[in-house]
Length: 239
Length: 239
DNA sequence: GAGTGGTCTAGACCACTTT
DNA sequence: AAGTGGTCTAGACCACTCA
Image (cartoon, rainbow over all chains, first blue to last red; front, side, top):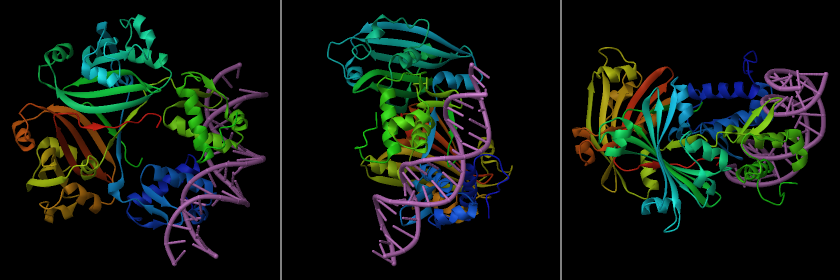
């Protein structure tokens, strides 16, 4: 049967939804082989490219598994990855409908401690820019930022004053592009963090550590700590 | 200049990498408009569909921003979205090269407390299956699982014994398909959690809460707590 | 060998937005 | 009005893998 050509939107999207319905409803069950593209193309009354795009997107999302000659099957559930998305802080706050505010706590050039030096990949006596700042949502502390910027990778940072704006946005504009690594975890707030975030010492913090590279060099390492309660949600399966 | 047609792989992938290089290197900077598809098509010596696919993928990843008439620009948000991947626990442990072990702590049918009832969307006196279990990596407690299964959505759970294997895998095989929601946060371990995870009370836990649906109904709500130290990492920018 | 998905083309029309 | 991306087609060839 044709894929309700009355519905709005591109054909590939309608086909995608239709197939997703058949999978969700259990009409096509995990492991089952579904009809080949050349057949669905007639079923839906469209070209093979259009069917292909719908199937490819579903396969990219892990709903389907495709192999040449073997055909297309509904993926076994366990194989599917669940992704969640962490947005940039300003966006996140803005989407909650809050006012965003930034305060610089400290900025200094110094030789980083060994564990930071490892992460930056910098020399033994090489100085880096250390920045500590707090991000507020509706005047409540929301994120503590503890950042190191490599001065060999980003020499412009040496003369930059971060009183007026957060280093993150500046780096994004200044450093052309980069790869990144993230680590997520939880730690207990120490005295300094607790004071800055207006919470009790030892309270649990959600921590995101991020390193970004320009080419082969780490340009910045930042630890973002979020106070106390649950922080982020994100739905994302098969849609 | 043609996109090194000597390199292997599909043309759209080569074009994608080439453009990514131009962005990474700063040759095309954030905010800058790049040439239109019909021009790149000649630059790369291929059809417009092929260029389009490369650009579309980069736009989907957030590297580029595209608007009709206005053209294609390098995205300003250098702080791409981060995607965190939640694997199935057994796989995760296996990938760390550890032995995996599972222990059921408690399983009982009972009426859930109000906050759980809200999340399950179940009736006031409706019973649900409550399961508490611990997952070990190399005999060290690695994850505490506190799960509620709706018996109206998954009646088979009433007669299921989770002594031998974790409910997660069983549910995945049993319940055909679902949407999911995740909430990530950090909390301090209470006495019970601390005992089961062999850590101190009040130590910080990374907590992932997940609800999954079958159609309109929540079939399970689970809270996964990971002890202390950093737990998960996942890199993901522009591939 | 044959059937499947993967890619690619040359062209077309449409939708949107800026001028 | 014009230029941009978004989609779609009909057909083609290739790559892979199962029988």
